[in-house]
Structure formats: structure tokens, C-alpha cells
Length: 523
Ligand code: FAD
Ligand code: SIN
View 1 (cartoon, helix red, strand yellow):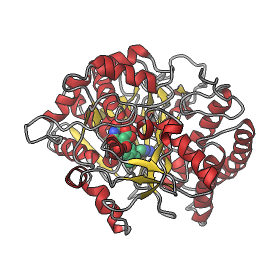
View 2 (cartoon, protein in one colour):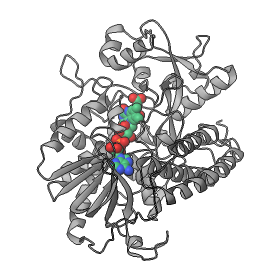
View 3 (tube, helix red, strand yellow):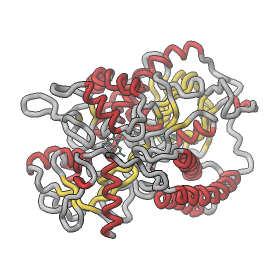
View 4 (spheres, helix red, strand yellow):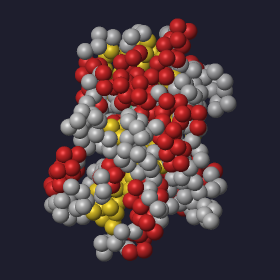
């Protein structure tokens, strides 16, 4: 089967949906998403969206916090641009129906998170993501120009390569003609030709064993762009969230929002002592790279499997009204957070790198844009400031639309694109080979490419990954395509890029810490 659309959007998180709503004013839009309509990292966002709302906060302060957190590797012009455009984009989200909590006096109830010098995080209780997805999907459903296909898995970006032309990473003018997609319900690979394609496939937390990311977060868009010889960068900067609920055997890990620390939650060791001030004067609210490394260090010193988050000092009414889901989740695990400490561990949470885009969301491949967690814009540098990612997605989807609605006029459909060739493949008779390899990738990445890295660990990870790659590719050649094998290949590709870029960086900066290159001692 084949179909055509002006705009093809891959992904139904905040980046894909906000772009689709705007693109629909300029042409036909198809959204494909590999799970249900709202399944995404966006849905699980707790803390909220960072934006300057009231004095004494200023854009300059938000800019400074973002730059400090990014450890010198942010693109300052991008930081200024995103924060400068933040209020306009958030107002649009509010116009689409997203509701953020207000105080009795009618002002927004702003939360604080690590690395922020002011209260500036707009939130909907502790389930901001659910509220954003609800608002956006209800707009999408009533739009006559938008079709959404759920349970459609994007397999590969179609370029000149599929017309039999030689394409290398150095080739200028690679162009995107659409995407091959697997209709998961029928098992058929369909061709969608598009004039403009937007990749909004989110992050890759699933490359690690312990992650806050849902199972969809397998870096598919990044792997597709890499296979199509597009540019990907900054992949060594993996953000580990300091406080995921310690719940062995349960994946993904449930997040205990940083906003809980912003409201007064304090990190403590097993013997009940505060420890963060040994590492940073900002204590439990230092940026995430510092807190996650401190927890890792404390756990190594004590031999404990977790540290504690003490919320007992937070006023009861505040805790119950702002964090009802966290309260209920912990209660369901037998922890009364009004009286007891929460056991927490760091977990892979956010990918700062991704598909390299310019200030208009353009990737290095023509007619192909990227927005959201799969994109690398320069905003986050070596470490993302909390609650800046939902904001980045809104701003970049908007900017991508401004540019792509013009580009649309120059792009045509490439009818000569062939159908997908599935010859010589069979249904997999040993799914276990695929699931074992996925677990092995997660193990080697967690053991050797986690919070603390070394040259030896990185080399070991690469050696192990090569074996898994070889096995998986031979399986892929003989097996008919399924999301499981597609995701495994994508995870391997993403793991490979993370390791290679970690090896190439001969310093410790932000989220990338290599014990062979310790950071200079501060005087
Ligand atoms: P996503 O929301 O992840 O959407 C990706 C979409 O792409 C999904 O619909 C997925 O199904 C689809 N997809 C992926 N691959 C394919 C494929 N091959 N074919 C078809 N479809 C595909 N950030 C903040 O700013 N504030 C917060 O408070 C916050 N809290 C967070 C809490 C948690 C637990 C997590 C995990 C993240 C949090 N983040 C937060 C980060 C933020 O939620 C994400 O970075 C952001 O939502 C990413 O949005 P996105 O649209 O780029 O991707
Ligand atoms: C959180 O609520 O702690 C997550 C915020 C974020 O990842 O930006």
C-alpha cells in the first residue's frame, strides 16, 4: 500500500502533535505513532515546563541557569532564542486547552527544580505530561486536515539510496522522500511519500537497564537518520535523573519529580544523614549531573542499593495537592511519604544529543526536520536544565513549521520510490533471541557507559556490542520485520553512537564523566 501527504509527522508526543496542529494550516498531515496515541515520554512528564512568568524572575536569569547547567557547551544564541520565544509558545499551549495549576489568588503556582535560581516551572499537579497530551490530542482529533495512524512503526527514511543511488555520510544534498512504515496490526510494510517529514520520535532511555522512559523510547528516529547518513551529535550526554523510585525488577522506573526536592525534599543516606552539601553548595537542588554522581558515589561507599528522599518536612497539604500521584504510587508500595523516607536511585532519563538541527529545525537531510528529544539543537549543551525539554519541543516545532511551510512549495512527491522489498524473510521462530539481545545491550550500557565511565569500560562496551550487532544483523536479514527486531537494531545503533562519541570526548564535562580524564580541581 502507498499513500501521499504534504507533511508526515513521526511521533505523537509534544513535539509531533504541536507541529502537526500548525502544519495542518498549510496542507495535509499524517501522524504515525508506534503505540497508542498518547504513549510517549511526554505523557510521563511530571515536573512541568520552565518559563519566566513573574518578577523577580527574568529571561536573563533563565538564560544564565541554562548556560551554567550546560557546562559551557550550550549554544548561547539558541538558549537566548528559545527562552526569548518561550512565553509565546506556552500561551499557545494554554490556548489549545492545557491547564496549569494556579494559586487561590489566580497566579500560576510555579515550582522550582534543580539548577533553577527561581520558581519558574508551570505544572499540572505532578502529571503535567498527561494534561499536555490530553489537550493536544483533543485538538488533533477535531482537525479535518490531520489523520493519525496508531500502531504504525516507522522503519526507514526513504532517500536517493532507495532509488539505487550511492549515498555516503559526505554526500551533499541527501533528500527525504518519505518513510517505510510497518502497519503493526497487518504486518505489512507500507510506503508513505511526503513532501516534508518531521521526526519527533523522542529519546532513547531504553538503551539502559534502569530508566524512567517508557518502552517506546528506543531512539528510532536517531537511528533512522544515522542509517540515512544524516548528522547526529552530542550523544555522549545522557542525563540520569537522580531520584527514580527504587523498585527492583520493575521497568520503567517510576520518577520522583525533582519538584519534590524543590518543595523541600532532602536526600539522605541510609543512616539518615544529609550528604549533598559535601558535593555542592546548592545541596539537593544542584544540577542533575552533580546530584546523580553524588548518589552514585554514596551508594558505592556505603554498599547500599539506594539512598533516601526525605519528604517529611514538606507541609502535608502542599505535598498532597502538588504530588498526588507520587503520594499514591508510594502508598501502593507500602511507603507513607508523609512519615517515611522514599528509597531512590538514579535512572537514565533524557538524551541531550540527537539529530543535529539548525535554528529552524532542519536536519542535514533535505525536507527532513526534527524536534523534541530526538533533536540536538544546542540548547542543552552537556546537561539539560530541568523542565527545559518540553519548552524546547514547543519552540522548535514552531520554528520548523515556519521554515517547512515555505520549503513545502519547493518539494514534490517522488513517485519512482519502490515498494519495500521483503523477499527471503520469515516470521521469527525464536523471539527470545531478540529479547535476550535487547537485555544484553541494556546491561552493557548500564555497566560500562553509565554515570561513571573509563577508557577501559568504553572499549569493553564496544567489543561486546560488536558481537550483538553481528548476531542481530544476521537475524534481521532472515526475519520478517517486527517492531521488536526494528527497535533492537535501533538500540544497537544508538548505543554504538553513544559509545563512539564518549570515546572521542577526551575530558569530563557535564553529564559525561570519564575517570581517565578527571575534571580540573576547582580552586
Ligand atoms: P515523546 O514524547 O517521547 O514522543 C515520541 C513519540 O514518537 C511517541 O509517540 C512514540 O510512540 C513515537 N515513536 C517513536 N519511535 C517511533 C517509530 N519508529 N515509529 C512511529 N512512532 C514512533 N521534560 C520536561 O521539560 N519537564 C518535565 O517535567 C519532564 N518530566 C519527565 C518525566 C519523565 C518520567 C520522563 C521520561 C521525561 C520527562 N521529561 C520532562 C522529558 C520530556 O518528557 C521529554 O523530553 C519530551 O516529552 C519529549 O517529547 P517528544 O515529543 O520529543 O517525544
Ligand atoms: C522531574 O519532574 O523531575 C522531571 C523534570 C524534567 O525531566 O525536566
